[in-house]
Image 1 (spheres, helix red, strand yellow):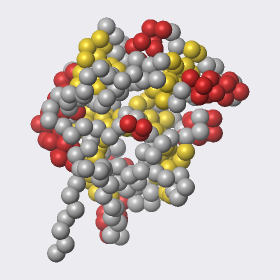
Image 2 (cartoon, rainbow, N blue to C red; image 1 turned 180 degrees about the horizontal axis):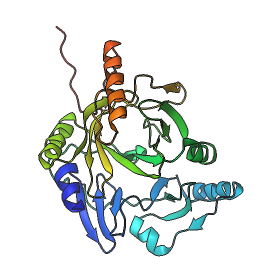
Image 3 (cartoon, one colour; image 1 turned 180 degrees about the vertical axis):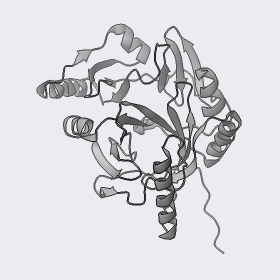
Length: 303
């Protein structure tokens, strides 16, 4: 099911391994690993540091904050295709891995269907959003211990906080739902047409979890599809970048979406509130600029 989902809808390159399947989307051997298991969800999350010395600094920093740190076994680094990694647990028990030296693939990326490619590079996979029992239980750890930086937040129709570690608007976010889990993973395509074509596939497969829409904070045009493991995968285009020198943290008073993004996972009252906020944003004339990767657009002629 994952092989079919990754190739048929996401357009990724899939390779079988002894441990499961790898999902490839750029010049790296993989960005996602799928393992057989007795439960759905996330087994671990990898965050990249620059080199071995930075990994050692991180280990000492975590130790100073009384966070137990473990060095990975050789088999684990081999599966991840990294030079070295250490791991620890966040306050919710999620396994967090810090690594350096993700290998380069031996051959060029070959998408499973015609595709312009994905926006990765120094910004990594995309982003991950976790559901959390309480924001106070997890936010201080990521912000104050790990050094993630606040991008913005929303209080309606749900409490959400967005964090960045590089130029991507957010690489991690939390939604306060009363329970811990993986809400969604986002990958960003380079072409808006790739989003539309994938949306057609998701409609045909009846796997749409959140309809096509555009976010107020990162300005991403996207939809969400249910994965075989029953968490969502957001397929996006046109995300904005963050410059810490000029960035101002703000509350999203008009909710998380400018338009669209009807969320099937919300209860009736929250869905109604989300619609009200979208109409409020429309009545206020709220708009956002388009953020297009270099080489993926032509300027329109005046007139």
